[in-house]
Length: 117
Length: 114
Image 1 (tube, chains in turn brown, green):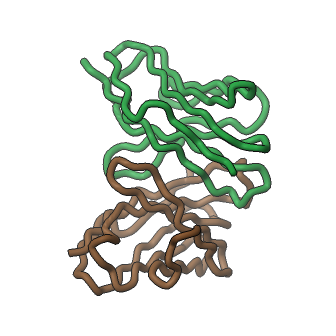
Image 2 (image 1 turned 180 degrees about the vertical axis):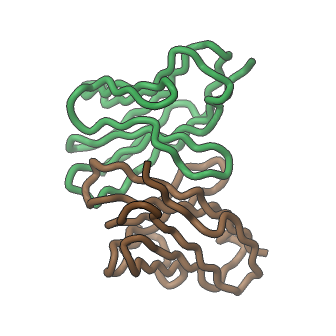
């Protein structure tokens, strides 16, 4: 099956600093990538949808200036949490999909646990 | 707007017993339905999906689910639970013609007792 690699798997940063998380599709070209946030014992909440070469579409309530998403190529999307604060601590998961319809499977990365101290 | 409801945030079964995880969806158009499994501190793995065709869908690890339009349900079952099935399970829906984004249910934690 297709592989999506997310890096790093975990990161601890100081409050006020920025953190970049990478999401790579290793063996396929991902037309669309998605970024989710998951709080402990809760479901995944979609943060944004990114298409290669265009601006990301953010879900309502997600601060686009705080969560910067770049989808520079068909195999790489990055999420940068700017000026991180403890409330940004969470599990962030990306997924990648071939094509743009709901029929195709989305492949998920292994997630990144961000802790802001 | 589409939504997904998973009944029961926590399900406990004995090893060898039937597993039934419930999922109901709300959608004004025919949906695509998915079940994913998540192990601690890991991403999601697809168990099975329904897009079109046969309403009984078989997935990996012995799981299957049946799409029932009249009941707007997509319950996940497995005849005999194994200890390794203990995990978090998510039902999700996406829409035809949509960008493909998934709307997830709240998740169900499956506990398997020896």
